[in-house]
Length: 515
Image (cartoon, rainbow, N blue to C red):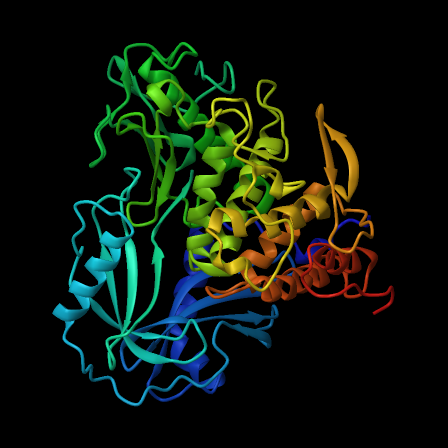
């Protein structure tokens, strides 16, 4: 396959350069709103800016209406180097209008209803984190006045709860809900002996990675709140490779954070999860026998449990890459964690968790298209998920169907995971790094693949420049085709392979060459 067009690849923006672009866009929001013919009551807020090597900028905005945040009102303006608008990508194409911004339902009634919703899902210690906030809900295509209530406490399995409940402010009807906590389920346990970024502090060392935005790794020591204690050691050797040593999981978490940071910076020109050069932080030893790991955007941190019997921490490299990629998605497309957009959010984390594993090229954990194969979550050596044939886990979807959005996001993600595998490697039997794959297609016709590195570039460009909060599978096809057109040319062999690979997972139909 042809190499991508150099001008369409991301420019390496330093945090300072990105900050300058964001400030410039922020100073011009009124003029931009006018140019886009937005209503008089609408205002734009800059969320993210990315730039291509040829000077094209992609500025992502959130919107307000009459001062209220519009959920699902995000849009991206694509400008050529000289400032001419090349196009606009909108989550919401209808004009933003609500009959009134005066609510008929009392916030207390909204809060009570949201609490009972959380309890029905098995949440314990559920409580509203703060008073419901008035918003305009536009994510389903019909803008209406609503309340957003965030319910805290703990979910059934001990994961922190951050249930966002959207209620119609006129009728009191619950419109939508989604979970704000996004989880995957030195001498490291999973990656062998590695070099870690640490900081000398007096006569000792701390697990603070000064070269990567100051990423810190903390020990929760089986607690489930706060940051715990920063790992400190009299020597600069961390852990002994066994889970019995508390530092081992910390070494794995710190290594995963470093490799993920390096991957996004070197491959996609993004410095840090937010692109602002600021690191997240990691917490290990969460809870007791907690068999999960999760990303929380509100603390900008990731957290790892120690697994069954506290003997198998969930700190493997692809899990670390997966969790931090939730942060990248939150900072870019903001895919809502429910329905098809939630499946795409989860798949993005699987895709980039896999990409980090391949990029890292660690001898003890070579790249593969299996998710969580190291953490042995089921105790039988089987991975958590399979990208070449997602249904092998017994629950994930291989292909799109009209009901796929009703599945849990970890299973509806199968469609995009399967797409990414096929786009990387092609269909049929294949061995990569000693693992055997045999990937089927919906229509029984083969697809050739474009190579994993090209597939990663297409997905990242689509995510960061063309997907919005409410992107579903049909819109993801459109977004990746726009990215492929930029990178490889509209109607090129690679572009057509992207289209045909979506058809191979039942999203849209095949194209013939030259279209």
